[in-house]
Length: 347
Image (cartoon, rainbow, N blue to C red):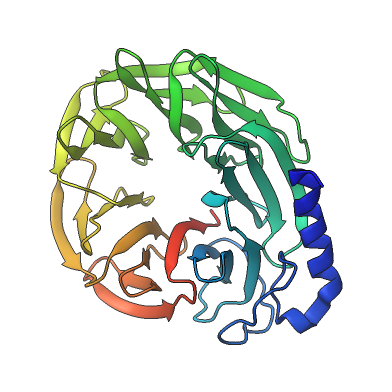
């Protein structure tokens, strides 16, 4: 049975198992969840998905949290003994995209209906690469950065398609992508110098390109005016965050030190999370304060509905919600798997 057909088989079998799986779908023998999920809730903007890896049972749980809710509404389970779900993104229809890397084999994308858990689309035969990831735009196009024989590509898929509609090719390798402020932003690794670039959505038109010398941009956030890029840069001796002027390419360091995750919101707030649990509250010009989570942070994301900060923590395996204005912890949800890999929030 091919890898692609095996995925389809798992999802069909899970559907046949029905409600006896306590709402979990996606594996041949789904484990019983540690607690029964809440009744199905209407999802929408602000829905949160947590990718939680369970090494003991060799599976990954995708836990869905509805807007303004303090209960997970659905749990989707997928066996992941060898593969790794390394990326997640929502589109504007409540569809969740999971990027899955199979070392030495291929990269694959699953499109799920987050409300029902149903598999909608499967994109296969992308080259295996742990730096591949997924992003979506306001017309529900899917973007996937991939490795190529020379450099790499960003592949664009129209809704429903399983073959690329457009490919952005470059001699640099795209190690990170994000869709923000009406553009596609790419962090590139080059043989001589690394770079950041901006493209028009659904186009190959490059509208900005700036070298970052030998500092690899591994994560990007963009301010509301699309004039500054906050880039997590990794050099030979340190990791730091710098703001890059989109017009001039001028770079200003705003945080010196290890950062595990970054998030920003429509008000121009930038959040930098260190793995030791400290979260710095910043603008795209400077950091002005911080608060402690007292755990090991894996990922952070800002909710567009209310500006609250969602923190995936592995020190005390949990999803935590903070008010970033005062650092107050509002709610903490235990995670059964214990290793949160990613967060996605429906825009």
